[in-house]
Image 1 (cartoon, rainbow, N blue to C red):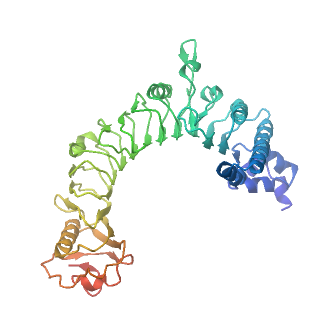
Image 2: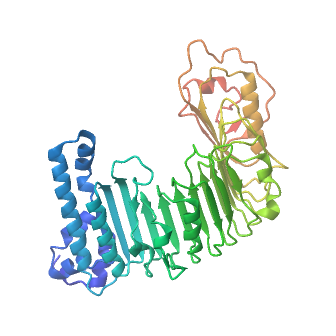
Image 3: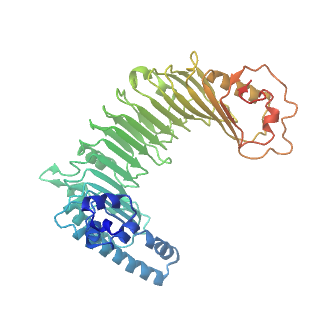
Length: 458
């Protein structure tokens, strides 16, 4: 412990990186060197987590005494942040995190403006500004913290992550007819941000260096066009499912595309040919049968494909020689035909009620690992045809290395029974692993095509 007091400041900073904010404050009492290192740590994190219970009580009950403590706690928190930032005399802050539960009045917002201005003067490169509640007004324009100009024009800023914010009016962002924002941004993450179509396009056009864009549950726009971003490699888009949206992306360097809750039938998904796309993950997204046409030329390097609870299509006829990893989860009845000779592994979840069909042109490679999950099953309508469909599905995955898991959402009712189900001619299928732990205890008794060691499913 004595020797730890005299460590070089760079070593202390590396130690602090592995500690939480509370532990960082505790170790600063070891010596003046530790105190100075803590006060000048290049990646400070400020969170009002200890005050959140008070904030929630005050917001929920209107307790004046509780609100008084909230105001006092907020002022102390803001003063602590200000004093810490001012300690960085002539020194740069590499990363700054501000995690704020609630901004309850204009004075608090103005104080935050000043704190961010101080931070930008310290040359912050990576800023994470997370605001969980702003006022209590349910108006789309007043429910978000307005980002100060100091952030938008910060030349040092390369990574920005914001939550519960909105951008200022466009006329505040021009200087001599030139749009001076986000010139050096490489990574941009927006969560619960209010931004209109025109403004979103304007900001993207000012980010020629951006390689990572993350947009989650934002409001204000009806059309998202991600174009003219030559260096963009990763795009993650999560939209509110209750709204229709036109989404178009044309980024020649794009390698990873994730889209979630792009849901309504009226929504339009436009994906042009992408020579570099390696990962495509779609969750609860509306797509049509034609979406899968000619993927060999459209996505020649695609290796990872995920379709989870997508809808709008009846059949998938997919051909790809580059595809190696598949993640499918289906709830609606559909037919899937695959021509993917280089597939390495598949994770497929199908509905017990509809038992979707999955087949291969030829057969999957023997070294391919296939994980099949039969998702919540109520067994009330189980008959011989269900077992025949299951056997057909497993046969289509043969000779890959198959793992099977059957889940049961509820116990079998008294009137439902597997007794009397006739036997049928089944195709032998080798099973590497069988998991019935989430199923009825007596289910194996009715799977008469299980052999004694349960390594094959016939």
